[in-house]
Figure 1 (tube, rainbow, N blue to C red):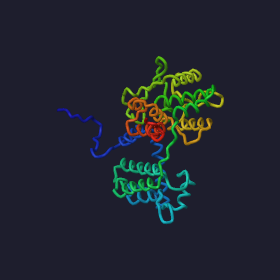
Figure 2 (figure 1 turned 45 degrees about the horizontal axis):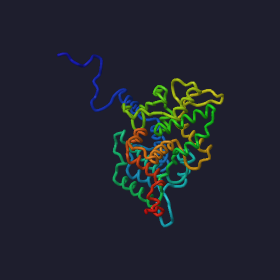
Figure 3 (figure 1 turned 180 degrees about the horizontal axis):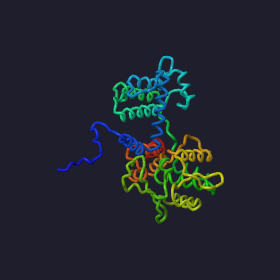
Figure 4 (figure 1 turned 45 degrees about the vertical axis):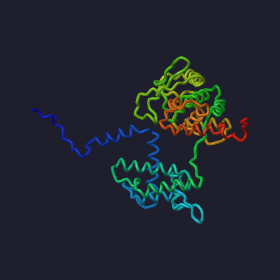
Length: 356
């Protein structure tokens, strides 16, 4: 019987990755992760490293002890004392972190930011295959009690305002017939009308996935936050009809774009530039909201939450709404729907209703 072992090839060890295999694994993990997620991971880990170096006077090394994670928590959240709200992070270190660019402002972190940074640390331990301090019972209980303490104080998670149909029409009225105005109108309607696309999905929208159909277009969303494996699903096809189709057709005709990214930068000389960054989508939303004189906190996510809220107000079937947005959680969509329908709830006017 002939040996199956090729000549001039070494046999690998079964308990470790050798040569370029580990590098290949790392590259695949990185390639399969979204750019936004990678950026947020890097930012969180840089903060952990800076905090650890300032707090303990030495570089961070994994695995961390659970007590270190607990210290991070009490350093970055407020607790109620007889003297009022306080936290454990020394003022000097807090200011140093701000001055070095690791924090945006002094003071405690938002609870959601704290949870995200601990989740990133947990992921780092998981990928290293070492004992994970974030799974420690004491750490988990401290996080749980912190959340409840914040809730009792009425500290709510800050949410961006939704751009529903009426408010969207206000900002669309600021889009004139210049090339920039045509692009922004097409971009806003593309993002909103196709189910509230995320900013990365808008920035990465490509002509190869756009198809002309009677009365408009369809866009094949092959990769998204809720479909990162690129599975073929009927709901991948997002229709763009009516005003959204008209605005997109006008932009494509005016810009001359026939391939590559749909939405591009517009240079000072009026020429079409490179593709937009995801952050530019947020900037366009904020700019148009300010131009329309709207007050509130708006971002790219306002288009997504606005679409779902409007669908709830108009009593759109839940299945149809979720097919457009790509949400997998009924609870999430219902939360938007309930929020949007609160002011038109007939039960709110029981006192004013004549039942006879």
